Amino acid sequence: MDYNSVLQIDNGVELRNVKNFELPHIFDCGQCFRWNRQEDGSYIGVAYGKVIEVQKIVNNVYIYNTSVDEFHEIWEQYFDLKRDYSVVKESLSKDPLLNQAVNFGPGIRLLNQEPFEIILSFIISSNNRIPMIKKVIDNICRNWGEKIEYKDNVFFTFPNIEALHQLSQQDFEKCSAGFRGKYLKETIEKIYSKKFDIQYALSSQDDVCHDELKKLSGVGPKVADCIMLFSMGKYSAFPVDVWVKKAMQYFYVAPDVSLNNIRKFGREKFGDLSGFAQQYLFYYARENHIEI
DNA sequence: TGCCAGGAAAAGA
DNA sequence: TCTTTTCCTGGC
Image (tube, rainbow, N blue to C red; front, side, top):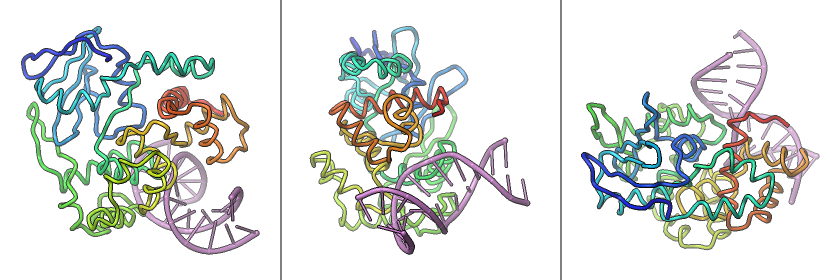
């Protein structure tokens, strides 16, 4: 556990003595697209059909627009708060190079997000930059999600499959999805018609899950790893994007090693903690703009 | 204006 | 099996 206790407060909950939890580390490490930093340093985001605001003051974390019951139902698991990240960090820090990355982003946590939303979000992420990915997802939510209000502002949930399966490729292209509109249409159709079973992938062992996910249109090895890691709790996943590639070349492997071999190397080196290692490396590489 | 970044898929070697 | 090309958009 990375927190001591949870208390009901006005319009939210207070978590006491939270460890290994820094908002920028969590929200700016490429795992989520629906969180936005506010002027006061808090973050507002939409997940599981709800809008919440998260703030950290000294060692306490405040989650607004929720209740203790809902915290236990959704957010405790969402923020992976039952895990003691000190154990993960200690194990990874045995490697001196990874120790450097861990010390740079000590408050990183892996979010447990909804598989359907994450599948589509990471299809949109392919060959795309984070601000653009956020814009496309926001367009889709605005058009077909449900409106929810918080602090006089309007937010939108991620649309469910019933709403999305009626849309055309052109509908997604109008949201600036570009050539990924076709992938979205095909993937939604595959899931809606039950030709692809998310539950089966979820309950499968990691390598089987990876192979299953790659059957979806627009999902290759990297996107499959992201889906496993950010929505399925499968921590042997090791997504190799440009930044992790740079980090791995910077720390461990020769510049001419292929993406697949970097993935293999990482998974063999970090085992069941590969996904955590990947997050520390990604954050380190991207924030420091490392070059090979 | 043109050029670049960014992964998946299809075509090519 | 590995490598190359195409797809699209926003920002510089």
